[in-house]
Length: 205
Length: 122
Image (cartoon, rainbow over all chains, first blue to last red):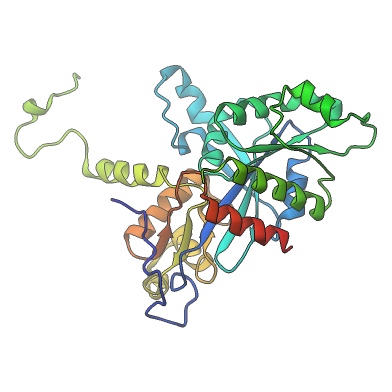
């Protein structure tokens, strides 16, 4: 059964009273918010989201990842990962979803699920624990997912200029580095703007 | 007991019961749904509200005004993502939900530009 394109009509629907499927199909887009544990991912999602961030649970068996290795069967039945996300209405048709990656890097299966088809990723960095974001940078670099590095301001973090950060992360010079305070919506939106501009730079003409 | 082979079962017998076949089909469709796939309740779904049960009814009520993603369905109905995928697949197959499955490719320039202008306007 092919469920794609199931939205019943692209134009006005048969029953004008309902504003669900009678409207043109919505355009969902998504951005991944990644980084180490406690770096501010949930704060970022909450600052940008127009709804109180939601949490859902995924079991490893729920996901479409093909895992044939029988050694993983035990883990498949027990592993549950919580996923935080928020929603932002862009226009009457487009909705942006922000998905925070699970803090523990071993849940790669979840990362694949939320990165597939994403605009890109914001990798949050705490300069006091810069190593914590290495895994995220590696992940998005390896898969060609557009990303920006966003330094979250924490009190007590020593100042580093962008060259030092770029050096420490061995970042390609084209990858933007932005600074933000994950508690303020404006600076988080700015980081998203940088990400979309970067994704446009990388998109085929 | 040894696992019987097909030819040992005779005509009309099957090793796998029908419910498992249906379950497998439904699940494989559901498992492919992106977490941002959007659903909205159809007029038929609204008319059938009284015959829907438990989570199915909750989903039909949840998606009757504003389209919701699979992730939102899972979070708001409080079921794991995999369960939400199967429930949405079943409801869609029954005509109670309209489902829009976005591309798994990266968004094209037109979509990125639209997103960019929306973000800049905030």
